[in-house]
Amino acid sequence: MLVSLDCGNSQAKLAYHNESGAVTNVITLSYEIDITQELANLLQNSELIYCTVTQSPDLVKWLKQNAPNKRINATWNFPFKIEYATPSTLGADRLAAMAGARAQFANSALLIIDIGTCITYDFINETNTYIGGAISPGIDLRLRAMNQFTNQLPYKALPTDYQVDIIGNSTQNCLWSSALYGTLFEIDSYIKTLTPSGEFNVVLTGGSAKYLANKLECNTFVAPNLNHIGLHKIYELNAERFKH
Image (tube, rainbow, N blue to C red; front, side, top):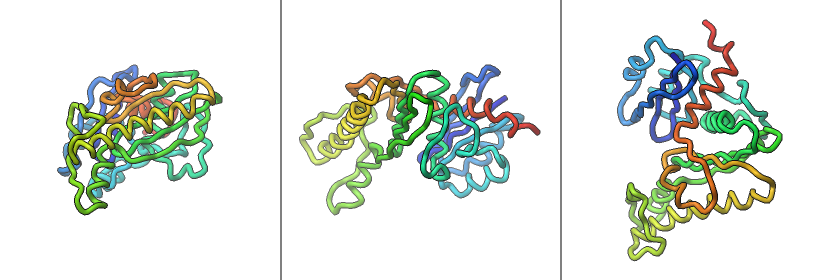
């Protein structure tokens, strides 16, 4: 059985795949505890492929020891060409998301937007070539930065229902408004700015995607398991690496 592991900045997600590659179950793992023993139990008798951006030292060490050569990078085979000035710095999570989007949309140009701790924008053009994108702070990172780099602004996480008035009637509500609507305006503007270049599908993923999709002006597709879908596609394209 194939298991894909996506180790983000805030948490890790492990997914099981059936024989056709579909995701059958997803387990969220917290970095607040040492998850290596839990991983060892979950991965028994399974083949692993993973992407990671985490700096969790215990997890990074465990993966290097127990899953050597199973972490994807830009030297692997992908369902698109890569023309990026610094491929060695390209996040494995971005590669997985792009592969997942290509697996779902076989022929069109694509803009993949991952809305997590940071927001990443990645564009695959009409010739199926990845040419780059952008990176900006996510909603919670904006709130934490305004608290950390000022003397009096408080930090409080956005309400879990994302119901925030655009005109804040308190300092806290003003902070929430700027973080949420600033993000929405940024995403809509980014999409609209690229629109004259031609038709493309916009795929949203990441922890905040399902909450923001209905608030955006532009049409988008939400894919919550995009990285895992992409990891399975990459596994198929790099089968030789997994032969024992």
